[in-house]
Image (cartoon, rainbow, N blue to C red; front, side, top):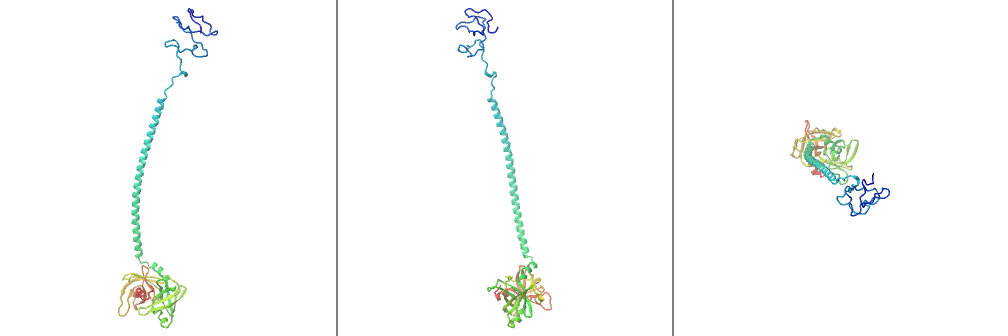
Length: 334
């Protein structure tokens, strides 16, 4: 029965008592239990593990060792954490390596792209330079190319029909505006001769439906030139600084037979030097008729090279003009 001795009570030991009456006592100090004696189980009583306040049983005693709290042996966690940290470090190293490889590849591709772009820019710059040079060459060719329409368009606003008494001819504005405000013009002397000889000085300039009074300022009978001046303002034509050459293309603008704004084209046939009392003349093959006298002969650069004066009788394609240099030197209005 639990809590009781299984054999006779040894000598000197008190008689066992029921567990409910009093707790059992351990053998007295200094006494040894007899052979075959089994220690009674400790009753489950409150208080310290050792009721007598002594130390734990000596080694080799039959008292059982206390079981660890919780009933299980703790697992070593440090080694698991080390493995986890090592795994994370390995993963990070792999990721970093992959990223470094990708960055290196991207850097190589970017450098290759930059190189191709630089090469393309160089090629484009070379092509652009070539195109600019070709454009400049074409502009020079276009400027050198004879364009009668452009020449006529630039000249017509400055060319007028002249009425001097019963005679008609052509006059054109030249040079800068007069100091007194107004415009200077050239025409032939024979166009205004009847008015000049008769003592008159007033003639009229006509363009479309407009009529402007003008004054004969000065004449050069030998070279068949007359200077006119009007108070109205018009754009003067530019005069050429170099003499014409045979073969040079020209435009003649005038009012043949009173027909305003007539334009004919041709080439310079020859430049005739002065001789036998007459001044130098330009021979050209552009058709002219009475009324063209005093009109401008213009080159492809829109510059006046001469003043149309006459045509050969009983012949075709022979017109004559006074070189503009003769007029500019004599009147100083160019």
